[in-house]
Amino acid sequence: MIINTSRSHSFKSCQQKEKFWNEDKLRAHREDSNLLTGGGLHKALALINAKRVQNLDQAADAAEQEFKSRLGDDWDSLLPPERKLYEAEVSALRSMVRAYGEHYLGEPYEMLAPEISFCVELPDSYHHCWYAHKLLQSLYPAVVPDWNDCNGGYSIQAPHGTATCFLPHYFAGSTDAIIQWNKVVFLQEHKTTAYDLYNGSGQSSNYINAWQLNDQATGYIYGISRSTGVRPHGVLLNCIIKPRKNASNPFYSFYREAFLRSDVLLSRFEQDIIHTANDYERVMRENIPTLNPSSCYAYNRECYYRGMCLEQRDPIPGEFLQRPPDYVELKYYSLLGLEPPVPSKEAPVEKSVPTT
Image (tube, rainbow, N blue to C red; front, side, top):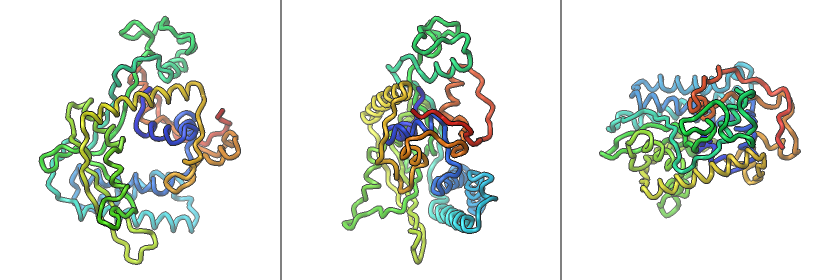
């Protein structure tokens, strides 16, 4: 399969949730406002850091436009109380962009790459890929046999003389900028948080300490190194500390720390992601996802699918949107030498999707 850190994290968090999102492709009608803010901020920071846009209002405009575009037609249909809440979120987003630009704009560093996308083969993971086979069978049902009957004997051939669906696992991702800062090459990561980043003794908080082993950053460095030959020394974490919503004098502050990554840790990541891909593919192929109630309120918000799990039912027609393929799913087409599907607009799910 093609796996990324998002799939890996979600699978480890709750296999049933991962099945709803990436197998059944069920998307809620409206994203959480924190996700809308994160998307808008990412758009603005790309302008400030990669293109060195000096006009912070221009960057803030880009952030607001991205926020509203993710809401789509919902923005025009918001009820007055909802509109007030979302307008407050947009205002806070614009303030965050300006504060970031004023703090970091003009900082001396060399931009090596504004963004890197990769899809690298994971060594010693060659197997009969269920996902590749499922795609080929859907496109060529008269040629490609059932997964259990596939032995490489059909006409779509790979260079190894076996069926095209015999593949290694691949690790994919899309990262933030690669920079040279103080003569050291880093992956640059931006995160927003409302946590206090120091405890009472002046030491770093658990939120910061967790980045010493954060596998998203480790995976990105692994993927960048394998795909480009450029080996970042580590991740440079830029934290934007948001004021609490009830703060009487709201302002943004910033925290930065660099975390190095050893070759040993990258090797451990490689083995771990292969094991996760093996488990992921087996669970989804056999349709045996487990339920993890501890994830029902992750990030202090209710899971979109909790109602279905609570009532042990299939989705109600119109309850969710059928999301289009994401970048990982589209990579299967290029990997297999196929034309990707024409993008389609999300539509409500009008029939039940089997969940068991």
